[in-house]
Amino acid sequence: MAYTEVPTSVQTFMDKMEALCIDEHPRWAENFKAGFANTLLTTVRRYDDGTTFLLTGDIPAMWLRDSTAQFRPYLVIAKEDKDIRDMIAGLVKRQFRYINMDPYANAFNEEANNKGHQSDDTEMTPWIWERKYEIDSLCYPVQLAYLLYKQTGETSQFNEDFHEGVKKILEVWKTEQNHKNSPYSFERDTTRLEDTLSHDGKGTPVAETGMTWSGFRPSDDACIYGYLVPSNMFAVVVLGYIEEIYSTLFNEPNIVEEAKQLRLEIDKGIKEHAIVKNAAGEDIFAYEVDGLGGYSIMDDSNVPSLMAAPYLGYCAKDDDFYLNTRQTLLSKENPYFYEGKFAKGIGSSHTPENYVWPIALSIEGLTTDDKAEKERILNLLVDCDGGTNLMHEGFDVDNPNNFTRDWFSWANMMFCELVMDYYDIRIDAHYDK
Image (cartoon, rainbow, N blue to C red; front, side, top):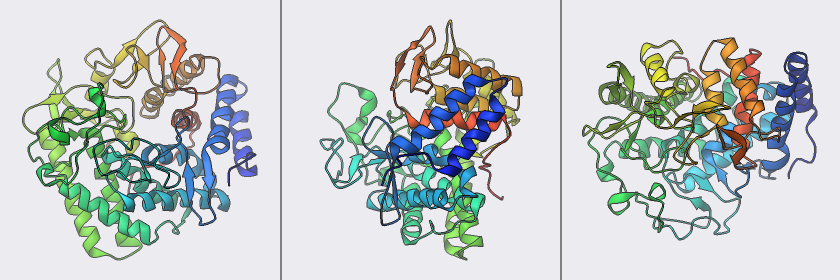
């Protein structure tokens, strides 16, 4: 079942947001209404078995990462609307069904139709669209399950698939602390090196650090160094969620202890191996490290990113390491920071040079307490929407009419979340430590 009209509760919330915006920021209201409705009307498929499938947009597959971010703003409506609550719980159920099929895959088909990258040299099945292993693909479904519970009290998402999936997640993350023991490899016949792993599909060499290895970034581009720091930060937070769920709801001390030990080891690895010096000699977080002395100072526009660390719940917005890192990321020291006639912000190796991403701009706004800065970014986003009232993947800082992806639900919902945040409507991602 797909939505043919906006549910009453969603329309009521959209009307509320329009009333907040309309006097001083009517363009925000236009884009909010367009983006907030677009996700429901164009991407949602609900099934009789109680699960929900969510298209990423202009690609006929569901990403574990994108689907969580697409639904996150609806959590504020799920408190009052059982149908929206069931829809989100249904997404979690389908996400964990997929994780149990293959915890190394990042994107799945709506049915076993053999669509996607079936020619990749890895263990593909008819259900898998793409099998690029990314830590965040396992983080996001746990986050959505946890936030749904914390926001609404809903627990139906914690079914047998969830429990089995959590065990698989813990197993994969522990295995990938020593990547030499990994069963995973990935190669694609392509001239685009970002789409394949070197060294016979195993990726560049790494040493053990306590962190857990990732083959690819949330951009779906290959890691240059194997330990992706923002994704390890996200894993630390998500392991805290697992500890809380299994100590308060299920009384499973073995899972609690396993998650706690892994959380402490990964966090220790970040603090011991991922703090480096920037050009000014300040301590900052690296984007990637390999445990062998290699590291990169940069950020990418996809989330998890270093910029997003407070948004993900890893640290406070005023954390010294974070503030130093943030300042570095918003400078030319970050090779993907672009500034032009119409905009400045963070782009990605995934899109052309001088293209910045609305997702990254939204995160920049969501990780500051400066109301004027949030306002500046929201104005920039609506001014640079290419006349569509929707967000895109990336746009040219010198000509916003040049953009990638007409239809990108994740970016739309990140914009909506920043508008909500501006008016103090928030979903808190921190766990009860």
